[in-house]
Image (cartoon, rainbow, N blue to C red; front, side, top):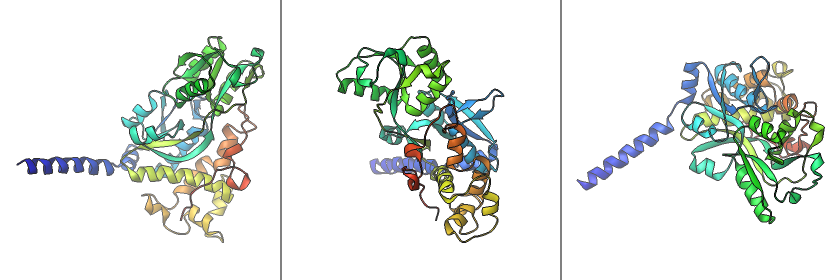
Amino acid sequence: MIKSVKIAAVSAALSVVAFSANAGTLEDVQARGELSCVVTTGLAGFAAPDENGRWAGFDVDFCRAVAAAVLGDGEKVKFVPSTGKTRFTLLNSGEGDILFRNTTETMSRDADLKLTFLPINYYDGQGFLIRKDMGVTSAKELEGASVCIQTGTTTELNLADFFRANGMSYEPVNIETNEEGIANYSGNRCDVYTTDASGLASTRAALEDPSAHVILPEIISKEPLGGAVRHGDDQWADIGKWVVNAIIAAEELGVGMGNVGEMCAAAGDNPSVNRLCGTEGDAGSWIGLDNKWAVRVIESVGNYGEIFDRHIGPDTPLALERGLNAQWTDGGILYAAPIR
């Protein structure tokens, strides 16, 4: 009797695992006709509604890319704003299908929170924003400073580690959104604002006089940022993974919004371009899509370089250089796994 009860329990457990593994997010999204994408509540250059209420930014374009791949239209996205505390709850509860929210991949988030991370789409690190008139030139001179810090983020732990390692004390000023951080920092309720360096560039650009503020030289952490989905649906994770890879590969291969039609009209001499275009091989069937999924992605948002330059590059208010996020052929560490 005991043995049969154990067998039943194991069988029930395996049924739950099987159900989870066969969860059909792709089918749900296609039936709904809309992708729900978890983003930040507002971070200029990465994800924020414009004056007409249309969401735009680096992370937003990755949401639109997935929608283009699976729905044929990058505009079929419902954006789900989230704070650092709520983003994973919204994803794991099913209110979001996928997350692109300047989120750092960590072991605990992967294994404990049951997230599957997509390829890194932005290599970042934590820094410090201060007013120039503080006369500080190094983060190691911030003894006793009040620091605005978003709760529910890796920056909390990094901040504590940095000050402890350098024998310094600080006063945390807890915030939940970037808007709240800007308000507190602008209102002199904290001396320092700390987050990913890309986020600091966005915050600095939003201040009344950006030239009166400086980002200190120290980068105190590694922040590999990327999208994420829930555990248990490998096909959906594969779709997200290969959409990101296609965007990165397209730049390396010289395929962009302006020439994708011409380059993908027929099979050419470059097998890598042919596989990206779907004119060679059958990669679409491997992830449950047709072979033109990557063409739709590029037509919708362009390649990685186009997305970067459009939202956060040198000619934008954020004025970020490619740095580590340059292609591996240009001195960076960015490259895509091969579509083959």
